[in-house]
Length: 316
Image (cartoon, rainbow, N blue to C red):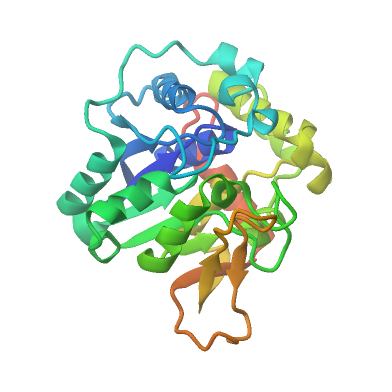
């Protein structure tokens, strides 16, 4: 039986790559996409998810619209990284106008429904702000025990942040939600410690360029990311954080350990920071699994090969 995967996303172009990777893997059944605000507004993230599915002829995958704002803070977006409305203009021009609508159920209800239906066959990959998953856990605290795993894209355990010196974007946007999932969900935390080193080098763009409309969209995403603010960090390459999370689910490039982690929710300059108790000074039992090392070449190949799974046969 194919592994069941639910993607909680805020597309966003690295979210798009994560979705495409999952759809390109024949051993995974994507049971749905739930959308959350983050990289752009909830209206845009939902439209982008629908357009992406239509682009690859997968409108059979349901999309459930979710939270449009954080628990308590004002929404901070990252269109300066992802492009106006969450995708760069070259990608926007290639994607169709969605002909489908999100399902009538709220994302939180859909998450709980899928958890009840699939149980420990289901993995949840929450690669945006954690609001939907935190709300689902508030309604049903047994959610983490019901599903196989909850993956979080977020955190900067032993490295610096990418939106403040201390915080990663997804945890900063809704620190209270991230804290709830870390405290009560025993998630697998995949943060900047492993996603930034595993950037895709410039030659990755050429692996897709000219291989049909799909290949060109992937190349455009990678090229745009290389030219943006992440490009300096990645030596001219493309940081695709959400894709690294999917690589950890679909392959074996990440090294994990159990750890005790807290998320700073004080609202000060370290709001959203990942407090990783590396040396056990709190003397508390682990509450999550954290990714601390990455086989960079293996990770890159898992990303690329799963994206190539969606290439038409004549372009593969």
